[in-house]
Image (cartoon, rainbow, N blue to C red):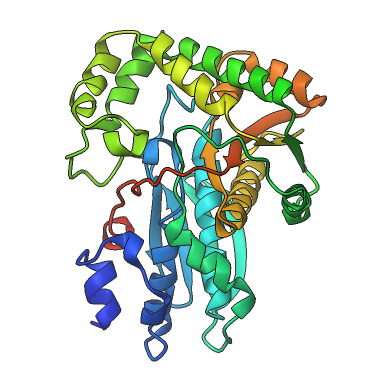
Length: 350
């Protein structure tokens, strides 16, 4: 039986926006299951492809089983399932940060059996880890920034920070800061978008995840999260479904990516769910670290998802490893609203 604490009535039952989670509401005197559900409130703020939020949870006495929702697979945008597992890895990183901060984390085990991804175990006698407070506070502030970046370089120390966060030897971190290679990656991203949007099946799938800026749906990409003008947000999703507008989208994405001062590419020799989970965890930790320092981040994966373009990315980074994830970082004046979120209660299964 789930106790009716102040937290449960607000976050769990949907009376409060999931993004408004507050660490001061942690149920210190509650049952361990109360505490598990609270840290899951941080986990569900992770990024996911098309904001599909593909996770499900089964809460037990001292653990939570983490599943992916097979109905939320994206066969056109993510035929390998790579982005699905990277999204799940981002979620697991948020969860472990929150659980470690509140002193209830015990261990994480990957299961990878059918759609059961992992089981996270908790304890009830830990202490606050204040070293993680800045990351915990950044989780509800994170946003996938869109638009044009300022022509301002990042501190050189940022590169070392990103490399120091890598723990899994299977993953390689490449950081690109010279304009020539940034422009080439922007061009490859534009090519990837043109390849994708030329396919009617891709456009139909994309249409199912795009919504106008007044939509109350709690999934997908409303116009404001794509920085669409308000009126255009009512028109562009339909245009995407029926017409190839890739030249326009490619041009906009090229200009945005070409403006960045910093690109990070995560690669590995092996391509498997366990590696993708680790890529997701590292990507989320890097993004949170950057966001905590006032640096905006933006995810661009078209150059490594579409066709054989990834081979050209390999040439740019000088590696024969497979690029698995790519994000940009820099300074941006624009503020942006968060993408919508399902309430935690809608993601818990019996």
